[in-house]
Length: 354
Ligand code: NDP
Image (cartoon, rainbow, N blue to C red; front, top):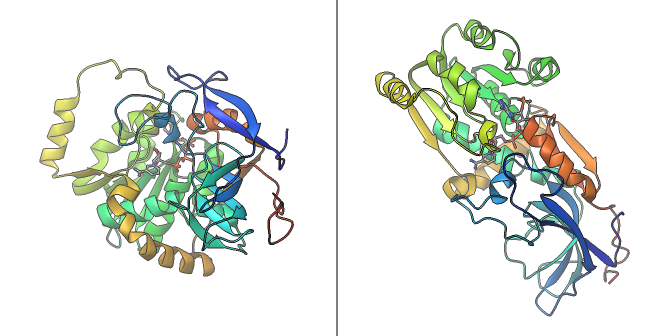
């Protein structure tokens, strides 16, 4: 079923996954399109962002944000168009950045809705390079990583929207950049298209030794996106006073328990102490939201100058989102994964069509 002006498709959380989400995790429901009251706007979703954090929202384990309730529309960042406006400052046809979640239409009072304007060359980029992932890369690197020219920066999930941006900004700052990615194709892309100095396949034999060979001067900044076996290989290579922006641990998002094996907490703490490592976790908008304008200015300039390469993977149709999300956590995505929910140009006149 494609997007229509009369039916609102919604993907709701049907059950909390144990381990990897599956076909029963989300349920497709339909309802009538809501009508905006005075002081409200009706928004039609054009693009839905898929992001690793959504796995956390499916769980009711304690976290920095509340879980999605069972039966509620799955949360998600969206780029939408204003269809009807009864609210000053919003005009039919305006693109907006909002959090409609996994559905076609939503009514809003404007809170948390950012007007992007009527004409955008790349509306979906507000969910990627100009939005949360790009901002996360910039802030984690510049505020915690603090790289200096000629230092070695290492980043995992190196071709994803965060990792690719981290590495490219580090190159612009004069660093040597070594990426870690899954598979030869992603690694070739990191070197040939993103300009990394090297990229090591974490699925290949001898990964730890290859990473050591690729970082002859050690690692000064490790931007952590994945954790697990990748971090095990990185930790011995960290230099004295290295910085670790702890951004994400996607290798463990589907885990139901801590890994078995010997307790290595003492070893980790010893490394932090003896090497005087700085490891800081951060949640982008809670820690650095005030810096967004600074990031947006810098990234706009870099993109205009062709200094940052951005790869996006657009998947058609809301119904494709659940499977696409499972694949995202498996490493199947290549670049920023977004769902194209609806056809553009559904707004037929300035008054709106509903
Ligand atoms: P990506 O699109 O890069 O997707 C995740 C990638 O992680 C996969 O493509 C895969 O890449 C890699 N991966 C998955 N499982 C494993 C594994 N077991 N071992 C190694 N690599 C694995 O994600 P994003 O760029 O959107 O996000 C990157 C990280 O940043 C995530 O952890 C996310 O949660 C975090 N984040 C944190 C924010 C914050 O405020 N702290 C804000 C935004 C994102 P590959 O195939 O190359 O291995």
